[in-house]
Image 1: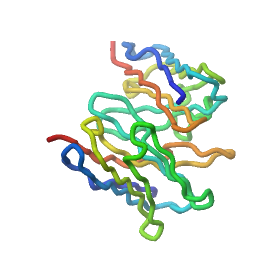
Image 2 (image 1 turned 90 degrees about the vertical axis):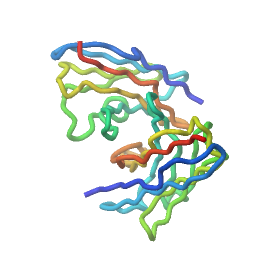
Image 3 (image 1 turned 30 degrees about the vertical axis):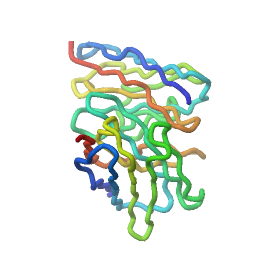
Image 4 (image 1 turned 135 degrees about the vertical axis):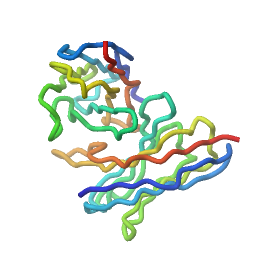
Length: 107
Length: 124
């Protein structure tokens, strides 16, 4: 199985900060990686697909990059509604695997 | 409007069985891959399994943690996806979500739309 290692597992940030979350795959997955946001009591929401394509309706402050084994989700200017957990998901090979998650909290 | 509504969760003893349902509407069910994803209390998201669409044979894939115990099926006449869970363990306690896949540029992606989830508690 492909292991997805996400870092950091948690972070504190302020409104307006630039936030970067990293996901590393245990083997190459090309660009078959998505990013999800999950808030408590809400359903997960896909932000980025195919490593760098912005899901329709998602604000442009979210961006994704990477290929192969190293991927990054960037929030250019953190907004109050962005405090949530973020997960990467590889869908290159079965079984699909999520990263362990990054909880972004208010500093 | 796309809607996915899970049901069937509840309390079950270890070793027991439970069947979850996901009723869908607002899209052509037979065209889409469907996934089950779960979240245990205080833990992250975990992919459980997938049902391919009819053109791709309607076959299934599973996470290692549930393979041989869980079975995904679909009834296109009822526009419903199912998750039959056997030999349940305490570690299967979680909120279970069904998610509609999306087909973009030749690839099937997880989670274009999600249900609100149903809670399964495995406890004696």
